[in-house]
Length: 220
Image 1 (cartoon, rainbow, N blue to C red):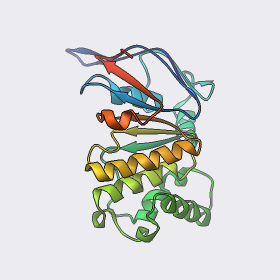
Image 2 (tube, rainbow, N blue to C red):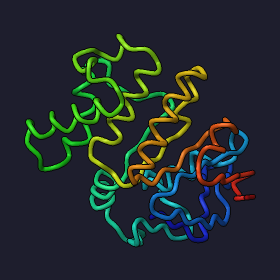
Image 3 (cartoon, rainbow, N blue to C red):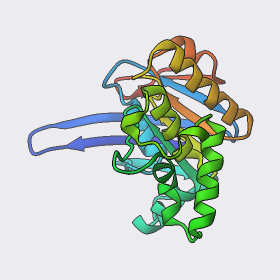
C-alpha cells in the first residue's frame, strides 16, 4: 500500500542544511499497522508527511497503492490524499467555530457529494468512534479524548484505505490513550492500513511492526 525507495529529505535555509531523512527504504503492505518510534527530531513526522504526500522528498520515489507519484501535479496529489489517506494529528486541528458534525464533514467538501450524503457519512463516522451524542457540540465543549475521537471520525469519514496518525495519544492520559488505540486497532481489523508515530513503547508493541528511526535513518 505504501512503498518508499531511497527517500532523502533535506531542508535548506540560506545558512544551514538539515538532513531530515536519509536513504529510507520501506514497504507497508495493505492491512498492516506499523508504529514509528525514535527520539525527538529523528525524522518521524517528516517520514509521515512524505508518506501522506504532504511533503515531497528531495530524492527517492514514493508509491501509494502501486502508483508512483513523482510526476503528479499538486491538484492530482490533493485528490489522491483526499481519496486514499486520512490524517490524525496530536493537536486535533479542529475548527472551534464549527460543530462536531461540521468538523467531521470537512474532507467530504472536496468531493462531488450532496450535503445529505455528507451528513450521513459524518454521522456514521461519529457513531463508529462513540460520539453520536455529541454531534451538535463544539470542540470547546469536549474533553481531550473526545476531541481526538472527532479527529479520528474526520480522518475516516471518506473511508480512506490509509490512516496516518502523528502522536494520536500524545496529549491524552493513559486511559484515554488506550481507548484511542483500541479504535485504531478496530479500524485496522476492518481493513485500514495504519502508520502511527508514537513515543509509547507499550502501545507500539500492540501493532504489527515497529519501525525505529535515528538521525533520519531507519535502524530497525
